[in-house]
Length: 148
Image 1 (cartoon, rainbow, N blue to C red):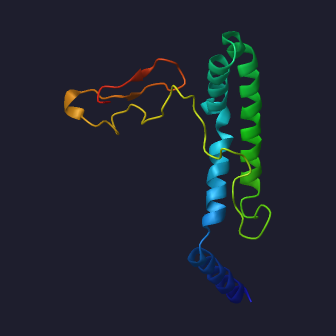
Image 2 (cartoon, rainbow, N blue to C red; image 1 turned 90 degrees about the vertical axis):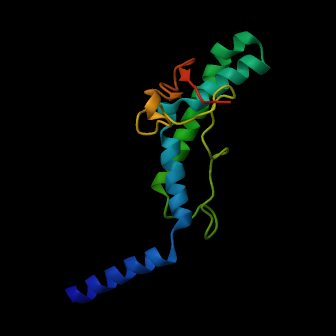
Image 3 (cartoon, helix red, strand yellow; image 1 turned 45 degrees about the vertical axis):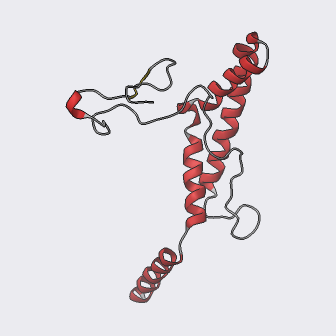
């Protein structure tokens, strides 16, 4: 009996891998990405910037921060939902689409994410330095040499 159940489980695992799991895999990845929102603070920075630009300049530190915290909580809870329910389709069979839009993380318009500055990803080690983001969450910390 044990050999039959082991054979059945291994055959089921092989069938699961062969058939593919692109939908649940994308849902899990999107959920894990959204769970890290409070570490990234993209929604907060974007709301602060957009409120200051499109509203009164005094709206950035007040309304922008509150709206950014609200959006960060929404993105984090949507990420937790997607992580907990990644094997289950959302509404109809095969629908593993996002439950929070935009599904990709957002950044302020004044910041374009790039590689972090380290020696592993350095484009030119013979110069002993390279460009990159040293601390992307600190404004003005971008050090770029080779940008056009």
